[in-house]
Length: 182
Ligand code: SF4
Image (cartoon, rainbow, N blue to C red; front, side, top):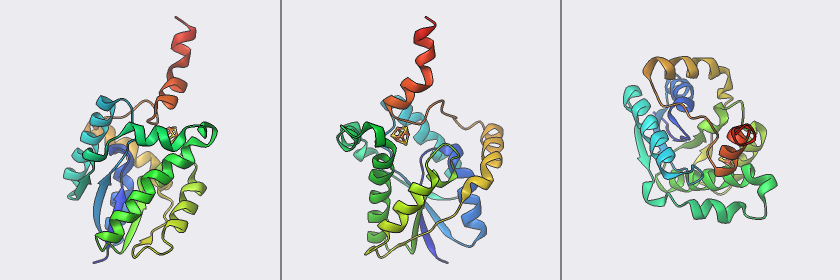
């Protein structure tokens, strides 16, 4: 059974990708590494949601709490704020590829390919670049077809659903009207 390391950004986004990969015969291991999620308590809510999904779906998850360092995120995007998502994807996917290579996984991929709100083509292209010289190959799949399914199942299971992408910038964008209307 081929082994795949699946970078997981949150519980709801992981449901459809885990299902699809299991249907294709992969042994799936999750990888929760997201220093881009702010603040810490939000990180914890998403991590716990991801672990709940993993338990229900019978997969193991490598959690990198010890590497939860928002400074790493801010260093990666400072003075590149306009293109911050690209650097944010790169930071998380590079670590995923590294761990997949060291852990002798056959493939690596990410739940970022599930989101309709992320830059899908940039994520796919990063994955293809990162597989060069990496013992694990990138698995591209358009998980967006499972969008509705992921929403429905996460609601049914009561999994925490976030209101913004992750970083302080996205939180600000999500709630800026609150400030204007105050
Ligand atoms: S909006 Fe989302 S993907 Fe973009 S930098 Fe912030 S957390 Fe990362």
